[in-house]
Image (tube, rainbow, N blue to C red):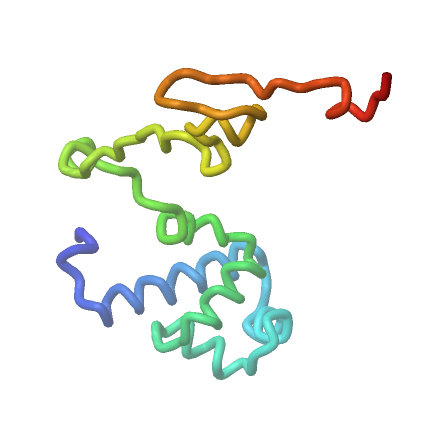
Length: 132
């Protein structure tokens, strides 16, 4: 029977049976497995009947070296091509000039500016601290 057509209770019972089968294949008693995962034997018996908690299920799978059964649940779902085509692509744009870059060259070079012309600062020997 397909799992989609099964009730939640039927799926839980199926999972419990699978835990029991793995435990028996490993030749482990309920008492041994319960002690190894830190629960009581009745708690493990509930799990094998489909009435256990998720935490006990994970602990039992870990002890039975069967955690790979949860891989499909824990790995990210692959993106479908249809979903990718509907997702808008990000547009990368240049951020422009850095904030510390200045268009005003007078801040970079001594002198004065008028329009687009740069007049250099005229220096004399006195400006450089030299004397004649």
